[in-house]
Image 1 (cartoon, one colour):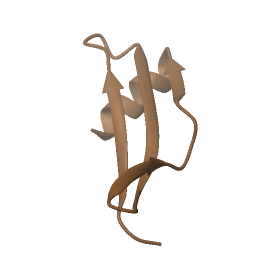
Image 2 (spheres, helix red, strand yellow):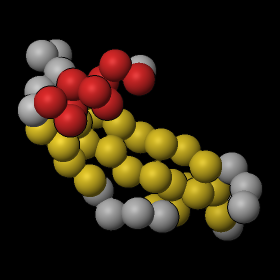
Image 3 (cartoon, helix red, strand yellow):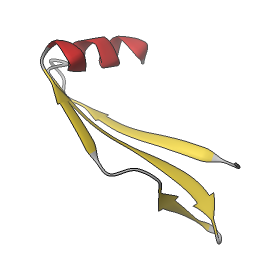
Image 4 (cartoon, helix red, strand yellow):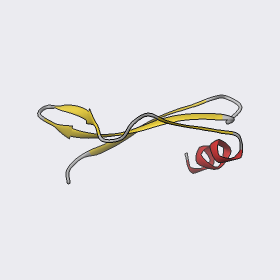
Length: 50
């Protein structure tokens, strides 16, 4: 466990989301997951969380 960071990029129309989870290790953020993309209604639901 430790410090985690979720990076997300949302399009203006909320029809596209790209996201990746990172963990702070060895004085920098290292990827924990692959880059994940969502489109359409799933992207809209994700955008509502933020």
